[in-house]
Length: 88
Image 1 (cartoon, rainbow, N blue to C red):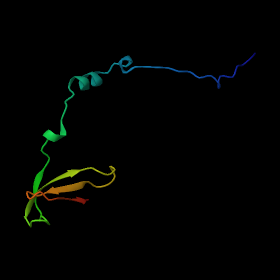
Image 2 (cartoon, helix red, strand yellow; image 1 turned 180 degrees about the horizontal axis):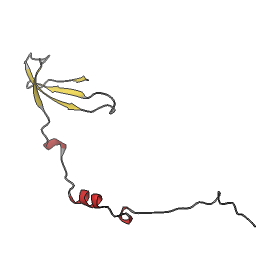
Image 3 (tube, rainbow, N blue to C red; image 1 turned 90 degrees about the vertical axis):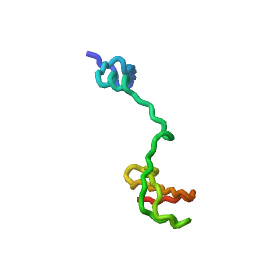
Image 4 (spheres, helix red, strand yellow; image 1 turned 120 degrees about the horizontal axis):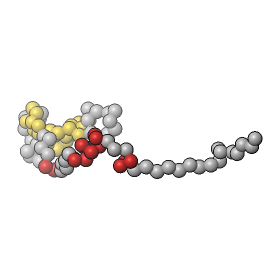
């Protein structure tokens, strides 16, 4: 009996997502929504003193600028045009 070395052979297969029908995939594709960042209002108001003009109430928003295991960055915006941030 003779055995051949199959470890040196390479087998290549290809498949497409359509080869695996999925009700969930079909549902997701039919209900995808597009959102433009500049149309979203993500600011809130907080009692925080502006270091530029002294105003007691400013708007803020939070964003994730660093890796997911680190805290968010809070960006403050005052009506005087001053902007500053804090890393949490």
